[in-house]
Amino acid sequence: MSDLVRLALALGAAAILIRIGMGFLRSLAQPIPEPPPAGELRNVKLQYRCSICGTEVRMTSATDLEPEPPRHCLEDMDLMSPIE
Image (cartoon, rainbow, N blue to C red; front, top):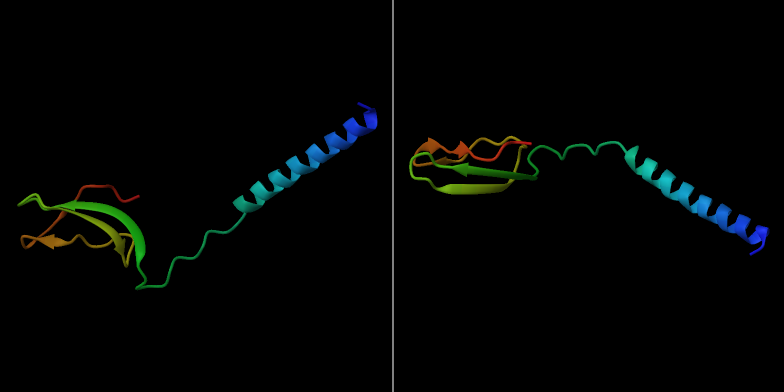
């Protein structure tokens, strides 16, 4: 291969790598999105257990990131999974 072809391939590969790197850095520089308005459901992954009868409940949506525990057997249920 001639030196001119090798140079063209090297410049093309460098341009592609720079474009991929800049795209990656640009995606990291995006600001964190604002939280949804109050009252809108948020995705949560919490699991609760009733200390009296052993009933388990998995909560997947809530209006707050740290919702109050549900009640069962007239008592608050115990949180089984940690809040992240």
